[in-house]
Image (tube, rainbow, N blue to C red; front, side):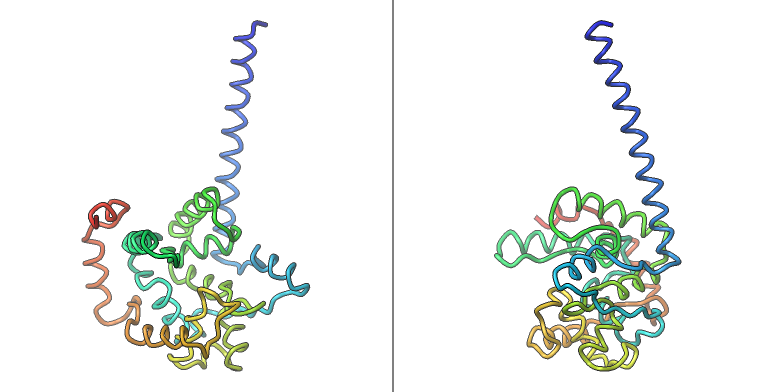
Length: 249
């Protein structure tokens, strides 16, 4: 067999195995996303990492979305105010974060709740193009295969809400000594205020207080709210995509 034939043979084998690996990844990832549509993930890689660091398993309590009271709206209002409007990616927030980070030493993120669920449930923490690419893929699958309300419920179930504390219910009990559904809007806003740095921020701190005030003044629209349908119609009628950043320059 000539060198050219050998190279061609190996090329075909590599291509065949690459296609098989890609197909397997697609099937596995789709099954993963379909699974969490119905079943709460028993753990996340972030939980495992925190447990490894601390030498004990984190506290976590499951709670249904309907039992979270003000917490669901407070978390959405704080982290992703257009959650029930966009389809997984909020390009206005991405563009704003890009502009801010270009002129500031403090990095601001533009990730949506759907993206955070993709990262927290299926992936690992850290910054890399590989993880970001996988996050985009899983976000698309979540938006395609899982209802918005379930995505939000997953977020409230796995979000880190304190040192070795995960989920809105465990966070409410850890910080306020009561269930998530019993929190006032101010308390729910304070709990949302520590999400960017839950291991170091306090619900009694100034940043949490400012965030609680922001939440109360900027409650996110939810389906079923008066006027929501009109807000959604106007949002869908506008153009939203990565090209939005070009229009802001």
